[in-house]
Image 1: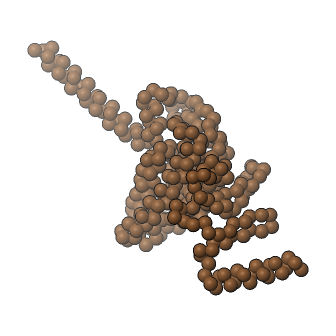
Image 2: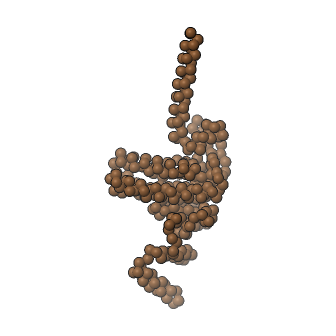
Image 3: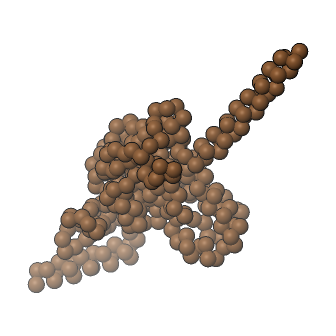
Length: 283
């Protein structure tokens, strides 16, 4: 009888310990990307100071004018809106198999290609599909936010680049951070800052991987600090967006014409300006 009671007590204690560990595990999972969490708890990945070089597709998103909006909103409203936005964007990222690296205020750093990859090209395709889905969802959320009384809903911009990074665990023996570092990460961040509100802007390295899957138009060239050559950027077009226009970017001039957006007055003004420019060149 005594042994039976002792066994029951032991089983109860083991059950409580198991439930406590499961609860702790569930809480820790919220601080890690699902892929990283699964690879650690399955024993696939060691929790050590290790890293490797891989070609990844990196994505940065942020909210346009967030600082100004935060100054005009009550902290409770701002927290509610920001957490709702981050939750929605994170859910989309996970659906496409992305690794959510970190939140930097209103910005999100995401990458494809580690710890699991579907190949460099497919990783890039999935990243752009994710980014377009995010922009679409933000448009839907704007209506919800307006209905909730927020007069200035968020717009986001997205920058994407594909390049080699060092990926792995960084930090100290007692405090590790699974992340990516390298010039490709910095370039992706710079591309995001160049993107127009509501757009998805990609580097030429990414564009060459996905050009058979997505329509995109060249936008601008810029020379990041530390790089010898300028980087050509592209804006990804929506599925229903027609590229009925002209884009010419050459040394000395830049010409962008969207025929579907031209009013009769704008067409007349454009013709006159082109005639004046051609006349000046002949002279």
